[in-house]
Amino acid sequence: MAKLDVFQSMWAMEYKRPDGFELSLEEKLNKIASAGFKGVSFDIGYHPLALIEEAMPLLQAHGLDLVYNAFVKSPEHYSDIIDFAAKQPIKPRFIAIVGQIEPWSVEHVADITKQWMAISEQAGIPSHVEIHRNCMTNDLLFTLQLMEQVPELLMVADLSHTLVNQEYYLPLHDLAKQRVSEFLTRAEAFHGRVATREQVQVPFMFPQNKPWFELFQSWWSEGFDNWISRHGKQSDDACVFLCELGPPVYAITGADGEELSDRWEEALIMRETVQKLWQESLEKA
Image 1 (cartoon, one colour):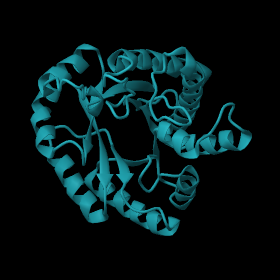
Image 2 (cartoon, one colour; image 1 turned 120 degrees about the vertical axis):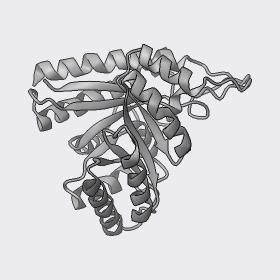
Image 3 (cartoon, helix red, strand yellow; image 1 turned 90 degrees about the vertical axis):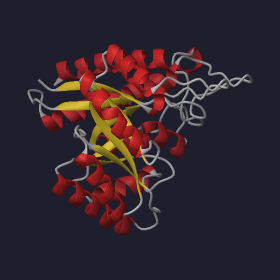
Image 4 (cartoon, helix red, strand yellow; image 1 turned 60 degrees about the vertical axis):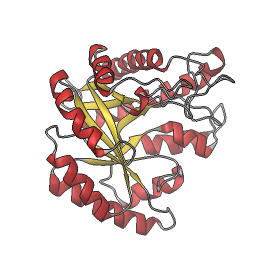
């Protein structure tokens, strides 16, 4: 039976509090494993490679799986990233590429993307492209054109970036619904965050943010439906949903510099929410 594996972001385990307190790497991984998450993500280009190497025996000890988000500048750069990933004792489920090339020509971006995919195929490490601001998939419409140019390309759906970039208002107009649905036909993995049309991450349990939380749940549900349809309900495959509630400046803070909500508790609520949505999608399939 197809299943949903919920991961926790290592970036999201940072506090960035005014007093400077942070958990150690071992404490972070103990907390993630004890809470029952299936795995973690590291961000290549943000997390030092030495830190990722240090984490490997701890991940193995806890039985945690791994995905990477990678900020990639060129095919040569991606070859280096793949080489690093391949040498580690834990093989990632996939690498989510955040392409650090200017989205000027869709043909050029498509060509580079195909080169990245060839590099990953040769290494036997799946690669998908994340929709993300400040990179080649900054704009949803350009991203949809890229997907047309590269039909075999699968995507990582972090629709918080999409919502802010397109600045969609509620209720979504028909064309907005259509464009997001087009994107979700190729969503192979999901990053969990709730945005509004103006803020990339909001405390989603606050009453004023309920309509946005409901919007994201509808998108996740639609994405799950498509994933199950593509893979098959009886498949042994697993879909990865990554809780990625980032620290400040993603997380909103008050005048004292402290966050307005508890992101760890929100991650647990998000996990419970998407597990319920996944079960509903399985029952519909």
